[in-house]
Length: 393
Length: 225
Image (cartoon, each protein chain N blue to C red):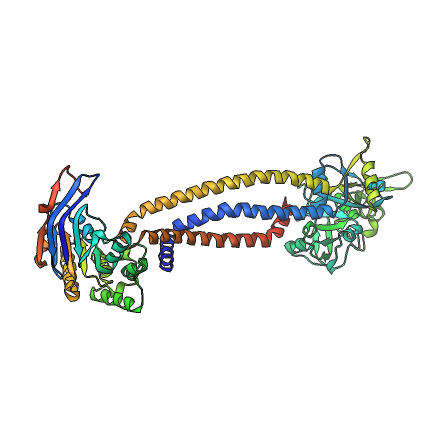
């Protein structure tokens, strides 16, 4: 058998292109469904874990899936906004944490939230300090790495629209800290205080006091009571500093300011049931949902689709096997002359069969090694791959 | 050495039939078998080597009746006793010269590939002038060199009998002479019986005997093997 393997090995090496194609066929046929299964399992594990860690979410009426995915992963667009004051409906029976994601900085989502969020997700700082002042931001570990920024650096938010000249201008934020890696979507975003996110949107703003303006041209009007009104040419501050922070103000009530979602952490199960009940009323202006329920529904759909893929993979495996058999049969036919010579110089039929078997074993063994390597790679990087996909989706 | 008695063999599908009443070839004799295409020359070699079994009569090689042996015994007998050389050389393209020479030892469990065999392979290569090409793939050799490899492969098992089927058929006149001389020298050195099938009447000079094969053949339906 050793000689059969030696001969077969030389044959495989000599016909390396054909052998490689056969290996590739086997590898792709078997690795794809295995890899898919591993990735799906990781996807399920991650998405369920994230959903389980987020008891309730409140958002504008619309798609429950969009709301859940927006609150959990910050990528999907929220169905709409709801007033910040909506939190007051839940604060008697739990903690409401705002999540406001509408802008980006260098394409990375900027998440406006409160300090409760970091406590709720049990997130610690790896470098620097937390959100100390208006205009501060802390970076998730992956975001910090991809931006190449650290505490003390500055980061400019992306303009909402390059053609919206009248819109709020980008804010230069101070990077105040970097969060410890959590292997969750929190690593891939920039966190700011909810008020900072309103500053970015122009709802809270700061500018030179009209009284301090030197040129009369900058003044639009002076009322009878002596109030000075700034003309539109008065530029708002694009960076919050210790010197100008006092000038930042807002008009109206923050309760009317928008948030894209609220995470609600009920005090207990009873509180959870009561809170859910509040949003079941027909006149409810917002929706509350349990992310785990939404995710389980989503995953049941995904697993239903997976069943189709599994059936497909079985069919492809069968057709590949038949194709490989055809290739082997044709190969034997092509090697008829070689087989006849071997027979004439004393090779037995058993040896010839063992020669072909040895080739099959070698090709299968190489394919098995490639599959094992592939499976190891996918298994090793599955969580990372899935997290990357979930973050970029 | 070789005795054929009252031999009859037919390929049922082609209608070809070969009949030989008696043919003796002595040990160490160099015999050329000539005849037109389809006259059964190659069939004779196949009957002697046990690849084909006669329908009637007997083939004795070295006192053993080849036709009476089992498949495995005939194969073993072929490996131990006979060296075969073919017109198309029949070398294995994916092996090197050295591996082609050693091939009978790789594919026969009854043969043991040891150091002595490897040394003999090297010696044969040296005696046929291809010692510097041992690690080259056979597809990179000239036709003359390829036939030398085939001769080395046939001689490696120290056979008593060499059956050569038009060994010079694909060679140019210069290489024809060289290869034949090489075969004769090796046969002389090892006291090997040589039965060569050929179309080429110009190479008959060095043979002890020439058998005109036309006389053994009975054609019924035309065509042949």
